[in-house]
Image 1 (spheres, rainbow, N blue to C red):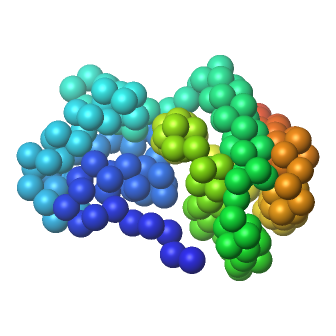
Image 2: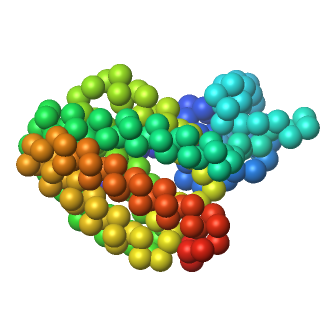
Length: 216
């Protein structure tokens, strides 16, 4: 399943997508004229998009320049705490409300994502798509909106836990266990499986950042 791309005239969406996919990583300097040329739009929508992203703390000032923001240790811990709570609720609600077709799509994603093993960037994008499908399967629009905000901030993390050796294959097994709990309509098990999955991902990311696990 292809990753959804922003519209060609959506400067904000295109910059956000470029940050999310690692084209611009934390610390990257964003120059208005270069962005306008890259995305084929005028400088006015680029300027407006940069202002919006700065307001949302996706960008920060370095003198007169704008750079992609980064998260320190405490911010990352805070983000994972919120993410775990919200995603645990999403899995719980998905177990109660997901249609059989949605569950089938989740299973298909798990199988298809094996093709990205060994490619951390692609696997990370596929991972985000899988998690968002669970968000949608919760059938709670307010929860989905809050998780969209959380995932926007996830793009400010410089590394992916899926870059750790062997983590990708284990993560996909964890994904399958989450989907099985949703299929079984076991809300508690689905929530716990997703929370455990994120706890392991957080531990792995901490080890990568500490240089204790081989990453990219």
